[in-house]
Image (cartoon, rainbow, N blue to C red; front, side):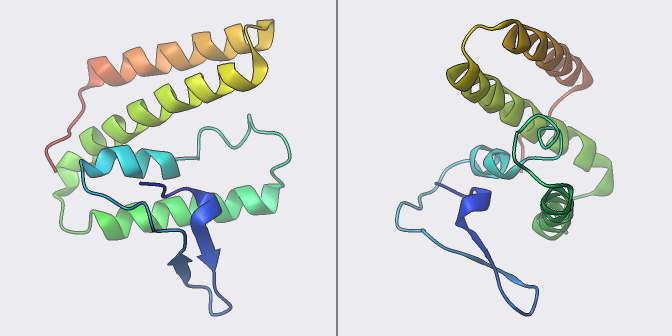
Length: 128
């Protein structure tokens, strides 16, 4: 239950391997996959070099394409909105814990809340 980028090992041949799997469990995969979602947050996090951000974006795209390779293309936008929604809720909570109720947090929270409402209105799909 901890599929975060910190638990992803990049091997010399360019492939990836998961580590730290002793707490794995079962449940809806959206809750695990959302922990990997990072494209929207890379510009908000200090200390992430552009090269590292690009690697994380490529990983996300590759992971999603492989995980949902059998999903109908028409359903993908609803599936991705559901993952996006959960990831933004997690990020909002984590960001407040780090920054507190500062003006920066209030601006970011307002932006993220708008995105969440857009996702809710746009429809989400958790039937996978």
